[in-house]
Image (tube, rainbow, N blue to C red; front, side, top):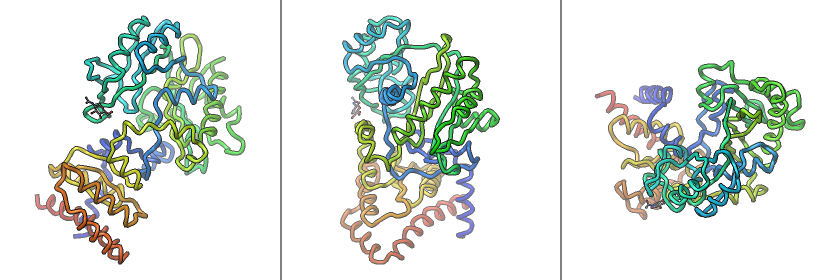
Length: 414
Ligand SMILES: *[C@@H]1O[C@H](CO)[C@@H](O)[C@H](O)[C@H]1NC(C)=O
């Protein structure tokens, strides 16, 4: 029976391109080693134990600007009149106005003011003012936000630039190289995992010596591999070096520029960037971590993060209490497969302590979508388990196996 269950579980893991996994990914559950996918060809779904620091687009752009990276000229506004002023001050041929929220899919989002689209292009500064009026203070709903959306408090007013060619460039900490690596592709603007899967020969990699930094010949070779020609090659190489400066300066684990583009005027520009930061560097990156805006986060997820629990709220009514990210995903998927809906994704993690187990129970039982349980009862239950560590681990194992085997046998009977 056990062997069957395990086999079943493994099979599940093998094709985990499931609703649950992608839903969790969309909600910001980042696979820490996801990028290794195209470096090692080994898919590693390690889930970070903590909530990642996410910066708004304008904050990332500011950091890049400060390191001399070429970005579009922009201003930030929190009122319509400021947005209008900014648009006039830009004095650009074309202006792009972007609502600043952390969730993706802004372009296709809808405001509760009725305005469609969180990103707008216009040539007229007055239009920027009008649009900003329908953005600021209203909720923007995209496919990645909660269903009531997220309140927009800031807009970015930027110069719109034409892009004649898009490339992909990233610097990341890579475990298999024991240090930073540059990854680039002339095929930018699209999903890089897709490029890696269909045309791996278009992915280029340069290992960076952390003591030496990016050498000029490496930067130039990467620029050439990215397809920059003539004087643009030098420009791109300089951008690459500056991005590496930024990577070091802010203790990033990843700086991903997609696209790193070229304009018809012959400029190399970083159009969009995603920066991930090393949590361990929080103590010396106070200014960066102070930019963390928690207001967009789900309160339950915040509470869970406080206890280092990997928790993501979902829409269903079956609470999941699981140890191990893979098992948690498999459990959610099995529930899904049998027509149920998980109320959450919860991975207690390896070194879980009694208090965390208690807090996890509390979070789950407080969920109005699920049938509640007596909190005092849970506390007694958990501490009695804690008295005997072995029984605690057996309990964890049983909970997991129980869920899987009963679901599996049900499935097999079906
Ligand atoms: C707007 O979004 C906030 C979260 O940012 C939420 O608390 C609020 O209920 C939403 N308002 C409406 C009217 O949906």
